[in-house]
Length: 631
Image (cartoon, rainbow, N blue to C red; front, side, top):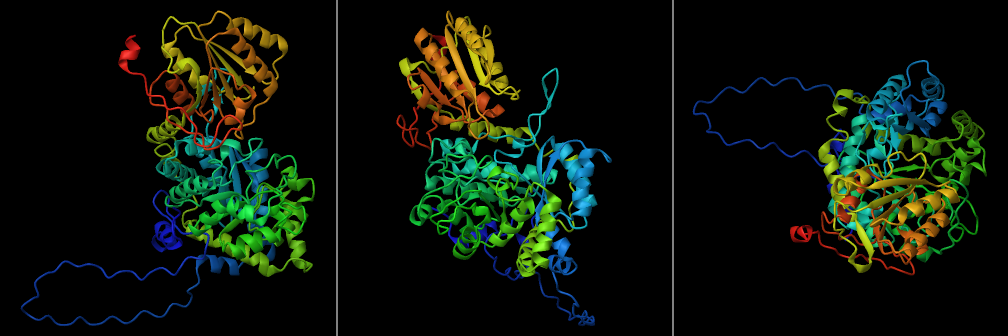
């Protein structure tokens, strides 16, 4: 059952509302109650003295305070209109090494100095480079910067995967977890909480305050090209249950959780990076499915919501506009009906669903008019600032509307402790980020999530005959240097004669013919597919045709999907089909161990795969015993 509003507030409330790195917590979303009075100190009983002592001379009472304003209020009172508008802007920043004077450094320094931005969204980089860059930017900022990052699968989602070329040496990084749908397949709220906790701890260590997670979209459309395994699943109940646990993990450990993408991006078949998705559901359906995880997260005290660039015309009077720009969606429903008073972030404003319709300045004004607090990744930072200033000065946008958002942002910065601790210690990063005990949690999620949907002739677990001739064929993007790296290494420990082939999405007919010639004569073929973060698989028709040819060859074969669970609909007659949910190192290691019987396989799909499988399906296969190994 979801937490009651009062219980959730008590659970998430931290001492005096101040978030400290690694230990603090705070209630967000709805307006928090006044802090309780401090309890009387407990003093151990001692014997009363037998001889009376003179009363001490009372000290004069201190003068009454002359200013009881909070940091947020004091700071707000000193801002000009342009400085207020700057607080609403959060541009994209690459986490690269950017020394003073380099183009990368000067680009962002201009945003800080000339545009007075209120924060940044951090992209890919190593943990130490990100920490150093954020410290540098914080040092340039008049007001502490609020820093967000897309950390849907942990801090490793943006700070993992750096490699030294040409030697292909993995330089390591932050902890990367399996996808949220893997957590849904494992079905354990404890694991969802731990994923949120570790994400928050590692994020705060490098200077990131807002992991833009969790995804609260209910993914009930197999054709969804953008959400897919980023969602916990297709059940509103389970998405809410896992989402609330993840949120607690984040917010009890010093960061602000962000539910996305309101009003719900799960039942779409269009990528909002490319065009405007339209959802045709009525209010009753939206209340029962799409809205439910967001409403329960708000009641539990989530600190931020990110909008989706999605049109829901039946809720906006037939108007086809992105929810990001709709006052009906952001003010009437999200603010007034659901009672959300936390931070509202737009999704990236340079996405085509927005940028094709409006210039950056106009888009920023419309988003603030609708009820957004933060303009995320405007296509042109200066144009967004100028557009908002002009809108206030012309009377189109009231300054009071801007003030409300600025105060939310400043109060969030104050609650995070940024006025006194805007910098992080690089020396601490190595003792917190990507440490082995965090990797143990990622491995547990990966193993608990492994889901087996087909196992004809009991192919799995594999016998592990060391003399067997095994071929591992990996379908991946050319840029995915880590695809199959861990998986093949673990498989080769059992099959020393393992041979491997990488097939890229632009492979021609001659490449496929060559691979098929290699298939014949093998004792086993393992075909693995590595999706993008949203589950997309390029050249799907070529992949399906190849798999069908492998099936016709009669060679024993197993398909492992490191991502999109719905692929089996394109080749339903395969011998064995296993879901590993994403290509993280933990998921690759778990998939290899599962094939070899290293642990019980017990995951269940958190989404149906029509017309083949229903919600909750999954074969339960016990680990291989020593007796089976001896045979």
